[in-house]
Length: 178
Image (tube, rainbow, N blue to C red):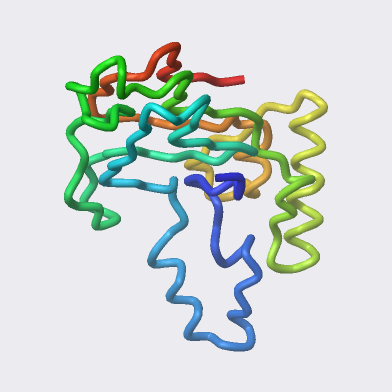
């Protein structure tokens, strides 16, 4: 995922929602943007798979795998994640080679994402991102007065894996970040 999706983005101030034209769209604020949540994951790699990736987050995106939550209606959660074609009982003859379960790289960057529903909000996000890049302190995610860029600029990509992970691949990587 490279969208930069993560908690802290304001759908009304950042995503171009035309509430001035269609006031009923204001209800979108009732379902805030959050980390991408994947409740159940069932991906396997067989013996012909070489250097495969199960999950990738880039450009400041955040993925939550198997997170128990009631707020966003994620149900039927994975209790175990494995890269093996036969789960934890995958034999070496059936195992993939070089599988990476979770790979995260890069940071959230206003210059790339260009959030702002109005020109004024875009300008404020751009100004605040430049200030953070120049060394200003990033604002707390809970600060209601801060722009999105003031809160998110420079935050790293993340993959949060909540269930246990069983690796069956040869020469494998469970979690890798740069």
